Amino acid sequence: MSGGPQKVLLIVGRGRSGSTILDNMLGELDGFFSVGELHNLWKRGLVRGHTCGCGRPLAECPIWTSVLETAERDLGGSLPTPNQVQGWQDQFVRPSDTRRLLRKKRGDPVAGLSRYLSVLDSVYGALFEVTGARVIVDSSKRPSHAALFHLLSGVTPFFVQLVRDPRAVSYSRTRVKPDEVDQREMRRDGTLRSAFKWWQRNAEAESVRRKHPAGRSLTVRYEDLVSDPAGTIESIARLVDETPADLPFEGPKTVRLGENHTAAGNPSRFKKGLITLREDDEWVHRQNARDQWITTIISLGLLKRYGYPVIVPARLE
Ligand SMILES: [Zn+2]
Image 1 (tube, helix red, strand yellow):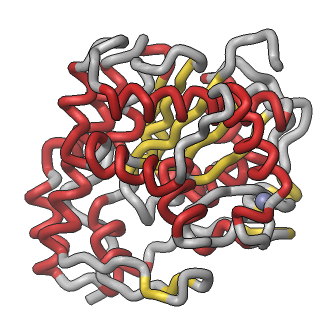
Image 2 (image 1 turned 30 degrees about the horizontal axis):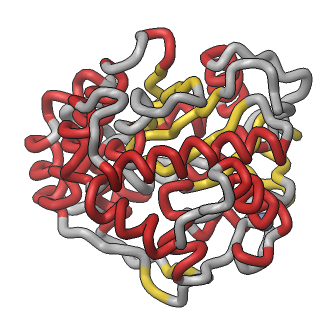
């Protein structure tokens, strides 16, 4: 097992903000290992039988098989079943539980939650041991998952709050995106719900960050990630006190992605080879004015904080 601090880098934020490509790029760095949405390892990976990023069913992936065997050993041979773990998540780690979890102190006597925390500690410990990584990248995104990390004893958490213009997120979430693996459509939202959820998730992400030292977190904007991916990756590496010898870029915006072992996440996590990043700004031209203004009004306070304009420039309609 690594003798240094076991660093877990959490990507927190709203979906459709570039978390999958960010997660995959970070996973390419020397000493980093990306696990995708670890929160969904049990429900989607082990209960529903979804596919690992390497293309195998998760239960047949050699990395995850080894990680779960190691975690079971560390727990004295009694790894709870995936259904048990999912039950604890449904009971204690719902999206609405974020602020309640942040108020908890280590050692609070809640039996199921304590068991879940010991499972998380053992799985992260096993990930460091099996992969040899110094940094585990976890793109679970949910603040309620990130709100558990002051209660864990075995890891040092860092947080990247990934934000994107809420009008772009609203536009993306009103469109259908097929999930190639799950054979279902990814969730669609109405404009009102999408805007409120954007505001709520970012406000909660900031609450999680305030629970930890200021030097442990960073705000990253999707728009900056796409315009300067190498610079963004370097700033995140500095956050976790790593200086990777090589970055996985073949050009200013072209990244080379290899195989990964992400446990769950957006279907784009399966992309490999050369990927060129480009900003998806279709919303600027296509989003109707009503949806744009509803989103702007609901998100106004945080919109300015993250440096987004109130009036969207360059509308072509
Ligand atoms: Zn795998």
